[in-house]
Image 1 (spheres, rainbow, N blue to C red):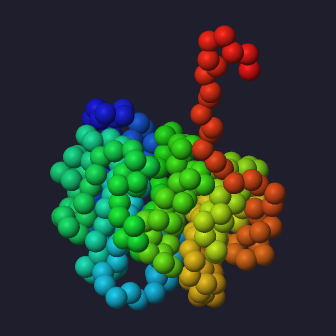
Image 2 (image 1 turned 120 degrees about the vertical axis):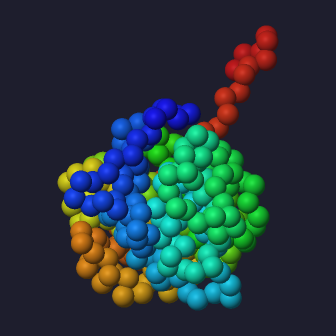
Image 3 (image 1 turned 90 degrees about the vertical axis):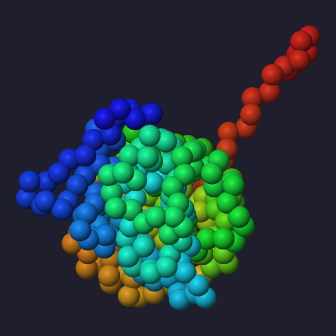
Length: 271
C-alpha cells in the first residue's frame, strides 16, 4: 500500500495466525501479536523490554515517548506492562500513522497519542521533565538519520526526561561498530550512566546487527545484576556492557555533533 515515504505491507505468518509483520519499503519494521501485546518478537525490543522492566516505581503512571512509531509494538507492550501508562509515539509518515490506527488494536488517546512529524522537531515541542522514558527507533533504510544521533539531541532528551529518566536507543551498525561507539560517547555527554546491549557476535564485530544503548542518571537501574542475567537468558542471549566494559567499548570515539552551518562569503570578501 502506498504511504507518504514509500510503501507499507502487512505479512501474516501461516503458522501463527495472530502474528503480523509490518514491512515499510520492503524492510521488516514491526512485528505484532494481535492477541498478545506482551509478546515482542524482535530481539532488540526484547532487550529494551528487559531494561524497561527495571524502571523504579514512580508516583504516577509511566510516561513514555517513542521516536519512531511504525506499528507501535513497543508502545503496546508498555501499555500492557504498565497499566495506566501515558505515551506519545511519533512517526514521520502521516499516512502510516493513520493506517496503523486502523490496522491494529492500539490503545486510544490519552493512553497512546500518535503524532506525524520529524522526530527531532516533535521532541522539541514536548514539555520539560514530562517523560520517564524516551525511546529512539528511527530509521531511513538501515541507518538512523544523522540529525537524530547528535549531542544536541541528547541535550533535548535530557530536557524532556524527568530526573533519573531513561533513554533507549536502537543503533544498527556493522563492524567495527564505529557508529555505536560514537553514539555511546555522545550519550555520555548528557547522562552519568550508559550501557550497551547486543548479541555477543555483534559486540565482537563479527556481523551487522542492532546495539541497544541505554542512558540514565539513575545509579542503580543499569547496574542491577538481575538485568545482565535476564539479558543472558533471552531466547537470543545478549550481553550487557556497563561501567569499565562500556568505557572500553567506547574507546576514543568522539561524540557526534550537529554539522556547523556553512558560511556564505560576502561579495568582494576573500575568506
